[in-house]
Every structure is written in C-alpha cells, then in structure tokens.
Image (cartoon, rainbow, N blue to C red; front, side):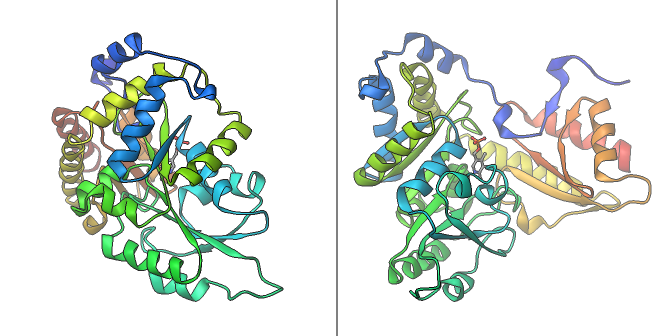
Length: 349
Ligand SMILES: *Cc1c(COP(=O)(O)O)cnc(C)c1O
C-alpha cells in the first residue's frame, strides 16, 4: 500500500528541505530590523558578527544562498582572466550555472580529487609559474564536506598543506563550507581551525542547520567589503533582512551540535544498504550526513529504485543512471531511517 500522508514521507533528497523550528519562527516574528543596505539592520549585523566569531574571522556577510556566497568570494579575490584551481566534482564548477565564468570571468582549472578531496601534490603541480602566456593563478577553492563526493571531508592536515602551497605561491584559498559544521564534527577539528586554513569561507544556514534562507561568508574585513560590493552587484542587497537573519542566529546557537544525530542516522542507513544485494557502497566514504551508493542489478536501475521508493513515501535523488544520493537531516528521525531500511529490504531483498 503506498503511503501518501505527508507526515509519513521520509524526504532524503537534501538537507535543504528542512523547515524552520518554532524557535526560529518566533525569533523571525520578533526580529529587530532596519535597512541592511545602509548597514542598519541590527539582527543581520548580529548574525554576521556571530558567524565571524564562530569561524574565527574578522567579519561576515549574510547572503541569499551558498551560490551567492561562493560567487561573491570568487569575485572579491580574483580579476578577470585569472585561473581558479578546484576539484572537478565541486559545487562551484558543477552546480552554480557557470557563474564563475559569467560573473567573475575566471577560468576554472579542474583537478580530479578522491571523492572530491584534492591531493595537495596535484595542486602544487597544477600551479602555473608566472608567464606572459599563462593566466594568473590567484585562488584555490576547496569544498568540505564535499557534496558530490558523498559528504567526504578534508583532514585538517590536508587543508593546512593546501594553505601552505597557496601562501608560497601568493594565492588565496576559498573554502566552500556549505556544510562546514558537519565537516568539523566528522573530523573532530574545531571549525575555527578548518576556517583558519582559508581566506574566505561560505557556510549555509539553510541546510542541516534548518534556517529557511541564507548563507554567510566570512573572512577579513577587507575581503568582506569587497564581497559586499559583489553581493550588491548580483542583486543581493536586501533591506529588512533581519527577519531572515533572526532564524540564522537561532540556527547557529541551537542547531550545530545536533548534526551528530544526522551523522549517526546516515551511518545506520549506509550499513544497512551495504548488506543489500546489488547495492555497492564504500563505507569509508560515509563520513557525515550524505550517503551515495551504486545500484548494480539486472532488474532495476537507480531511477527505477527511486520510483519504487516514492511509492512507499521515501524520497531521494538518482544522481546518475546507476547511483543514488540520500541526505539525512533534522526532519528525518531514527524511525524514518529504520522505515527506509525496511522498505529497501522489501524492494531489494
Ligand atoms: C548547497 C551547496 C551550496 C550552495 O547552494 P545554494 O542552493 O546556492 O544555497 C554550495 N556548495 C555546496 C557544497 C553545497 O552543497
């Protein structure tokens, strides 16, 4: 019997589907606001200061989305015709509508990471010495946790090495930390230590942290001033945005530590998947709240399995013809995970 009642749906498509908590809605309703383009929204200012403090940076900038945060960071740290080194499966290269080329007019130099995690040696080899023929190499962009990599994380020591290489070559580092708090929990490295290895960091309030809208970019005050101009150019100058920022403050203050639960749920889900016939999964890759697995069966491909899961009220995405991504978050509890396992066993067992 297909389940259709919304409260029985287990939505594993993304942690972006999370709804704001009652505390967030209260904070939003009561938020003090002002015109943020004039710098006069006290709640936005509070969120930016809080984010900067949590990540150990001088200043922060509230932006509409992770994409805007990444793109403002790229624009602030490059000039037209520069080259940016990044992983070929990165969000910036694959899921931001080629914005780096269109908005900042920089050339991507993609390297192949291991589940999205770049080898510092590969970066070192890719950096071009200054030459009249070559684009200037000004920025390295890394992503942790890595979305397409399946939630994989940079070890702190690897980020340190990349930072050393960047510094030695006069380059900056941008960290796409959409899920940096997940990465911090998974690696055991304090989020400030991770952030210290980059000049600019973007993180999302609207994913596992549960806020309805928004991301924050942090870095030096000089960097944030430049990123703020880019944000305005992109049409991202908001006015009484404190209504949104209020939820972000609650997200940072109350939602970070519980991300552990999502990691535990993902682990349980992944270990269950590993026992099913025709499912191929590398458990070493399952580090945070994302699991990506391959469907290798005669009777069913990944999109086919998605359709069958949907008949049972379980939503996920096929990201290739033979692979599926599931993402856990605060609006899927342990019971939902166990039910997902039961359904998978019924379909595949
Ligand atoms: C979600 C995500 C972003 C930003 O996404 P938006 O939908 O623009 O907020 C950026 N980088 C990574 C790694 C992401 O997972």
